[in-house]
Image (spheres, rainbow, N blue to C red):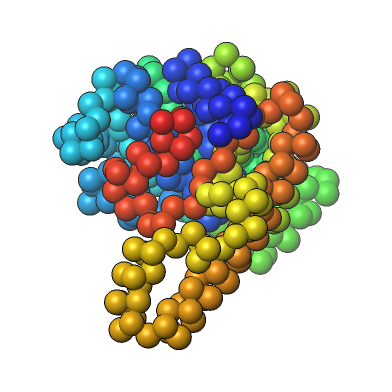
Length: 398
């Protein structure tokens, strides 16, 4: 194991022990969710009360942690799940899967100044449509759930598994999306023909905005427009709450004493490109990045000398005798088998070396200040706590 690997593992252990928030980012299919779960398990072992928040709808993670399913409620993982693997967490591990629509409704309930405003918004048909649309934005909802969990004070550490991002910057800017949508100028425009939430007649208003409003009225009907205005009239009282939440999350994501971003990727070219892109975005925004986990890398990456001799060259007499017996003592079959084994070995070494060059390219790009941890390809799928502990062993150097 190289010095760079040890430094990355030390940085990850430090993050688990000292930070309040670890954010795992990266594209889909790179092992981001299982990495987040492994980090959460390590934090619980270290004695911290930790929650892993995932947006992955797959049941595999829930099953790995011994749960039938994950939902928007926080579920504690039974410590007995770890006992069979010789592990006794000193802390506690919780997990949940983000329900975007339920999260949006919770936000409305929390920022509404009173019950009347809350009910007006939640019962509005326009809100129903907008919430269905915005709930598809996992980036925004992850930001909102982060605010609620952090300010609850119930957890020492939050491990956030962010959505797979085609545009990796979405999550960083998600905190202000709804506040910008419900901007004062937009609300004022829709409320022009209204007074106290009731129409007073378009004839009282003049200007381009009213002409557009009249046109919309002809197309959708005045009742529909009244409902839009009612929605904006109700949500006007929520603006300050949205702004406060957005500012809080933004400050938290920038705080180097509380937060650490972990960029998860694979050695494949597209994934590496996305990792470099996200690294640049974090650096430009002065956010605490510079920590990478490269999953699914060749186990013997960098050991090019192994290609000098195939596995057949290292088979002893006992090995050859066992193979010969298994193949019916057919010398030709034995030679064919060893030949195929050699070819497979050479292809594996070539792939491992490609992975090694890819990892070294990433290290060169991010510079000496960044840390890169390599996790080898596993021979089996991760389907239980044992698999998550195996990943954790590579991530934390045990």
